[in-house]
Image 1 (cartoon, rainbow, N blue to C red):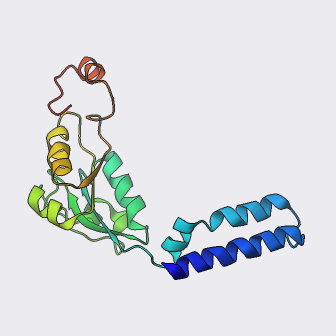
Image 2: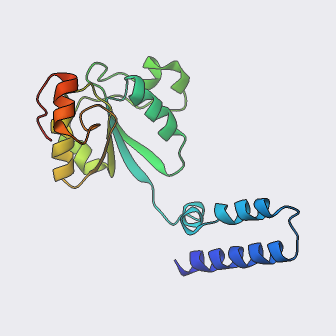
Length: 171
């Protein structure tokens, strides 16, 4: 951690010297250069964080597969589980050929205990009315949850119930 702070300090000093000595022709370029090297970015570059284990529940739907595509190319993310009720046992690359050779992970059915044990973050991408119980359970287990469905989109339960014409089970 001290090394990361030292590198950050050196980058800031070099940036200020560059600005003052007009090494950069334009001031905005120097400011962009400085902003790129913030502390979190340096930690990310120098491996200050470990891999994040992510599971995606509802991975074969529209939003879910886009999330798989985005997270698949992230250098600090390891996809632990791809959950799909309708495609359990099938390879994600068989369903979506653009993943052939890139991600050949097998989709599984929902095993909430395994997902809780293996995941740092769980994304849910399910139809409305199906993720509220799952999100509630994962949250109670201390897992960070990012819900891409409609179940937790609204802050006001009355708006959800009016819009979707159903009671919210885990407001």
